[in-house]
Image: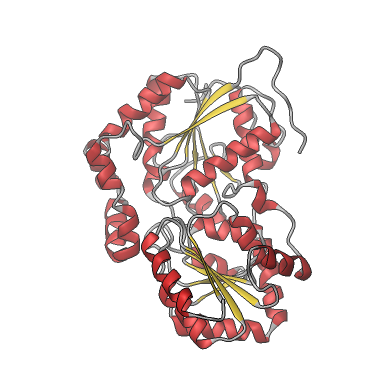
Length: 411
């Protein structure tokens, strides 16, 4: 994509991207759109990625409450599921916004006042309504956009705010918006934005083996990549140990994210083994390389993992899901032929052995994974934001949205 430089003497157009580090997908999506804007329109925009829930402006009690998300989905996912379902109603959502989420409205309004953005983009469900309110009262010229970062099932808070545009990643979510009486002119099925490094052409067998060696793996074995998202959830230790114990000639790489307890346990396990088959990493900045070198990815059905693996044409074995927002993700992948559901370790091991013995089936899964990918999603969203922010759009017809001016005249 050829870049369009900013006009001489024109300051970059400010944008406000609202995220929160509950998981890693919200910030990753915002960074992917930021990257796409800079590639298409270098120097033309100045996005600010801002966290109103966990940032320094958030009250201490709110930060404490929000930080419980990671431990909850790791240790008591059933409890998180109850909370998610309990809050997924108009009455409970209204109560939440009037109580513990109330400071978010002031924080977002202050950020809008400070940065004076041309467009406000919410990448987190609890930032959607505050973004709309801030746009209405603080910056009426700025459109409020929602980019849904859940794949199939979205909380009501994503959809009930009167955003000028709602960008969804899949047909099921577009249908949900239609059931909520959100018109076609406000909703677009574009995909989940991923960074450019995930959107490269798939590697051939020889290239994949060379990349494995470059990452410190053996380079000639079947590589299983285990990942549990930013929180390192999904019982990765038990599953890694099961693969090592019940399979041979298989390399296992585990990306632990911010789960330091898991990383230390796995490092002790790796130290007890002399065969070097277990590789353990925390947060990595080259996740695309790990996905592209893997023969199969094993992990929970997180939307970011699915979107990134699909762009890398990597098959998926899905072990679990976070109750609530990840409901339906595994079925979405399995029905497309891009992966399988393996809720028990013995199911996972059996499927790994079967795929090793049937390379043609693995190749078909790889093709199906690539077929559900949306590698251009970030570029299409960037084009829409450029149009709304005052630059000409080059992909409005692809996104399915009519071209509009910089002002949100239809609010």
